Length: 293
Image 1 (cartoon, rainbow, N blue to C red):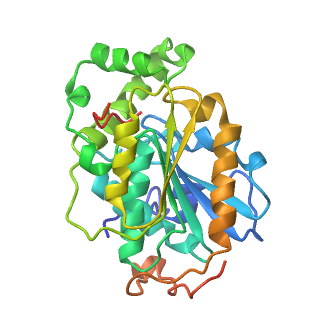
Image 2: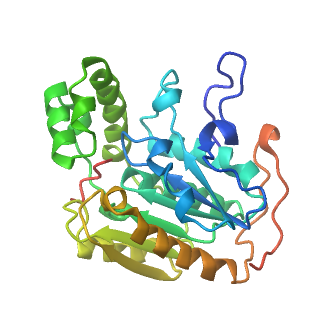
Image 3: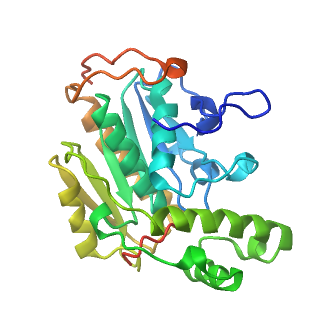
């Protein structure tokens, strides 16, 4: 698996703690919900979620390189390299079952990360994808090649960045830099040949989301041979920010049912790199433009 730079000021970069932030540690939790933010977003998008989760579930939120407090690191512009690093950094957190959730660009990152975990024999309990067409429906785009004005117009269209941030020159420069890299992630993404996993998938869609139609959402059935569930919510592309409670209720319902189901490894054991080696886990009970926002 590809790595980030080996260190940052003498500190290893591609570690679980550096990648996956934990706003409310729950050392006795039975499972972890690992969340991947939208394009231009950061781990803080999920800061309010732990209060809506049971004590049996610990939330971890991905912080991509080049975002928020990782702004000093180069941002990825190749989604496969990002997923390689994300999967490797997740290894130490596989001491208990994990479920992955991703919104928009985060759905694509979560999907590719899940594929790597499945291939390694550490299949997640479930993958929940939100606001993003399935991989075979993601089309190339050129937003990342546009001018700052064109990129800014797209961000305003999606209403994913507060106006007060866009109005501040210094913050705007950071936002545009990060957003341009994230658009490149989605707009240059191409699927790689891999076996279709038997991975349970839940698809979330805002009823007024212009970036994901009902027909596109149905296409996620081709990304797995496992069970596929569909959930719809009031609101648009950022329905999860507008009304997080319904989203969390559905996630908790899935987690509760998945934790009660027997778990089996789906492939050969993988221990990762020497720096992140962990034992294989035993069987447990337990519009389609590729836009990144």
